[in-house]
Length: 117
Length: 117
DNA sequence: TCGCGAGGTTTGTATAGCAAAGTAGTTGGC
DNA sequence: GCCAACTACTTTGCTATACAAACCTCGCGA
Picture 1 (tube, rainbow over the protein chains, first blue to last red):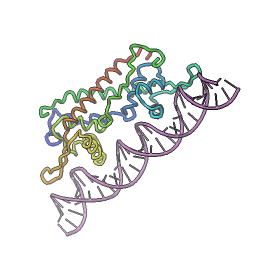
Picture 2: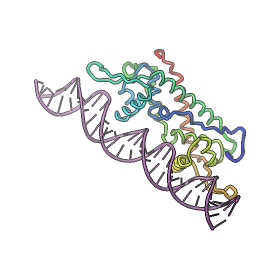
Picture 3: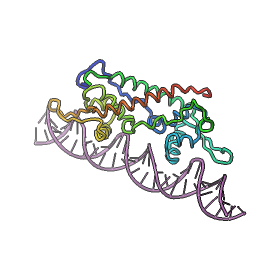
Picture 4: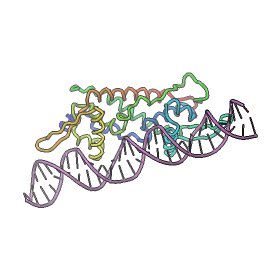
């Protein structure tokens, strides 16, 4: 039982302390993942793909922008206004870090088919 | 460019929509991960391992309990009061689901060393 | 028996997340 | 060519969340 006996196989470390809440948040993790797949992504595309309201997406993009994880470009497609989001170098590093922690977490959970379970 | 051309290799699906915010939240994901590793875990152990204040941990445990993901047992160790947390069957299913989505996410991100990157 | 500490819980508050309402420019109908 | 409806977001307002400080209860030592 954890905390009672010191089982050497028990990993007594926090599985999630290295996660950055700015990146880990569900919607933003999705945005970064998609943004990481191409040079730039349209606002509309993100909204439809992720099933978000424009207002909600707008706010999450602002958070990512203020963290330096994405750049926002405004322009037009024909005469219609468009907003594009692109991931920055810093954003890519942050995403990689998140992924690294998640990989470790997945391994840890999959490795714990504890006998008493 | 996503949203402009229909590149068949582009995964036009949300990477994170199947994540449950109750489970995905950083601290709670940690609690469930640790709880999944043994039959029951002491409150104090969770608190120290994850570096949380007692108040914060208490709240997160309540959320997990109300979701049916953990059971809370109160008792004594000698004469000192103790609180133990144990993951439920439903909690295990929820954790597995989270891990499944995270695995897919990791693969997706690692698979996108997009040429234009 | 009084105070101190252990072990949590409750309360207060700042922030986050979300959608409704608002804004600015565009297009289509007549 | 003027106005209504639409596109493409942004801002605002509300609710819920996350956190720590303050609080509570019980046992133990002096």
